[in-house]
Length: 271
Length: 200
Image 1 (tube, chains in turn cyan, brown):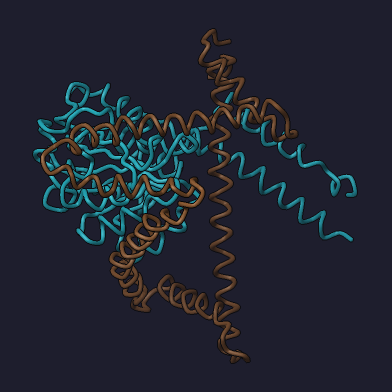
Image 2 (cartoon, helix red, strand yellow):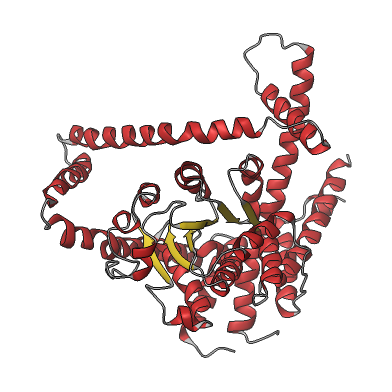
C-alpha cells in the first residue's frame, strides 16, 4: 500500500499509453444504440428536400479533429445524400481549413459536389469578429463575409448564394454548429433564437452537459454528442464507419480510468 | 515504416510533445514554440488574404468607401499604447469596443434567458420534470449567501443543489476524460499506422 501511495504518476501515463497502443493495433468496434437526440438530428436531415439550404458552422480546430471529424463527415455526407445545398463558415482560420478538408473528402464521393463548388456548396471561411459576421449573415451572407470565400474568390456569381441570400428561415431549413468550445452560444444567440431557424449542435463529449439546458428549453433542435453521437449518426445515415473505433478505444480507457480511481480511493482511505 | 518526410516530421514532433509527460525538456519546448509560431503565422496570413486584402482592394477604394477610414483610424489608435506619451489615445477604440460588445450582449441575451426561464416551467407529470425542478431550486439555494442565518429549508435545498452540481461536474469530468483520450488515440493511431505501419 505504501508503494502504491508513492507511485509516480508517470506509471499511470504509461498505462494509458499502453492501452491506447493496444486499441490502435487491435481496434475494438462498438456501435452504440442511437439515442433520441441523435435520431432527432438524423430525422431532421432526412426530411430535407433536394436543394434545401443548410448552414454549417465549424468552430473546432486541429486539436479536436479526432473526435469531431467523423461527426462532421457523417453529417455532411448525409446532407450530400439528401441533395442539400451547403453553406459552410468557420469561427477561426484553423476551423476554415478543417472544414475545407472534411467537405473536400465528402465532395470527392459525389459528382454533384465534386464539381459543384459555388452551386451545391460553398466555404465562406473565417472572418475576424466571427460573432458579428454570424449575426450580420442573418440579413445578408455575402456582405457579412466581405463578398469572398475562404480562398479569396468572389462570391458574386455563385448560384448558391443567389438562392441562399440570408441566414434565416426564408432561405435555410437547418443550421448546424460543430463545436469544441464556445461556438454553440453565438449560433443560439444570433441565429437560432432571433430567426427561429432550427439549430443542431455537434459537440465534443465534455461540452454536452452544457448544452442540455438549451435542448430542454427547445432552443436547440438536437445535439450530436461526441464520438458516441458520431458513431450513432454514421450507423443511422449509412456513412463510412470511423467513430465506432473511437467508442471502443474510449471504453477501454474508461475502464482503466475507473480502475485507477477506485484503487486510488482504496489506497487513500487506509491510515 | 513510412518513407514520407511529412509523416516523419509529424511523428517526431508528436513524440517531442508526449515527452513532456516524462519531464520538461528542450524538444518539448522547441515543438511548443514551433506550434505557437506556425498558428500565429497562419492566422496572420489567412486574415490578410481573406479579410484585409479584399476589404482594402475592393471596399476602401470603391465609391462610398471613405467610411472605412473611421475603423482604420480607430484600429490604428490601438497601437498608440506602445508610444510613450500617446498611450491615452488607445482608450478611445478600447472604450468603443467594450461598449459595442456590452450593447451587443444586452441586445441578444434577454431573449435567450427568458427562453431558459420559460423552459424550466414544466408540468410535474414525470420523474424527470420533478428532478429538473428540485435540482433547479436546489441549485439556486446553494448560492444564497446573503441571508445571515439561512432557514432550514434553504439549507436543505442548498445541500440537494450541491449534490446536483457535483453530479453535473462528474458528468462533465467523465466527458473530459473521454474527449482527451480520443485526442490521444488519434495521435497514437497516427504513430502506429501511418508512421510505423503496424496494425489494421
